[in-house]
Image 1 (tube, rainbow, N blue to C red):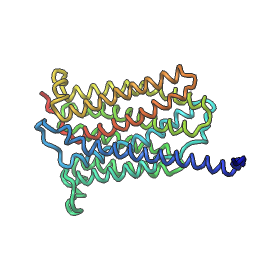
Image 2: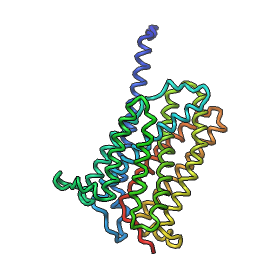
Image 3: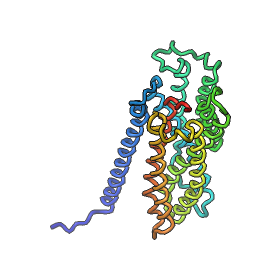
Length: 338
């Protein structure tokens, strides 16, 4: 039997190997989750349309996927700004110890998605097969075209701001994307389009702060070595998230009743593609609410408040699915008001 103990260098190598292995497992888990999230917009439209008798939107899966990327890009960038602002309100928080910003990458992904959506608009809402299919100049002549161009340019500005010395200035570009999405979702032919756009703007903004904010808060908790500061940040986020959740619920109910009169909601939730996707979103949001309550309970009563990290991490995954389902909703035919 050997009595030789591992040297300090060997111990360091073992520790490094463990860290590397954990990092590899996390990377694989992230890739799996991203792949599953991509399946939702690609597979979702044909699944919910089955048996409804409604006509599918051309290339609905591709459009839903691009809009998922666009929504996710806004969530990541807005969430970083939101979480950083919350962190500055935590006494003694190690503000210099922060993870690398994902905002530049998010802006790049958002730009590619917005460019793809603009190409669809330039081809009469059909996916172009050749560059010659697109009428680029025609984008300036239609409302949808102008909004698509606004989103493309907004992501360019957001990326430049994220790389600058004042990354907080990207908030204005992100706000422009949110406004463009709110206006796009409610054409002028719709009754009370400004009311609908206002509800959507609040809904999208609060959802982006809730989803992206939690993601970046968890990233900060992984970096910080101070449990008290971490628990304080998570608690501060939980209080703000409760207000965001209330606003999301109210605006979501208002938007639903505008498209589905109260007397037809239950029937349309199962009889129309839009209603089925909305029902899936409601179930996911309910699961998110349960996870949020579990995290908040642990934060208050557990001996170690940071045990709330586990349900909060599951909450982020569920919120990612909500974002994908929300993108599917934008690629489905709007239900007829009965």
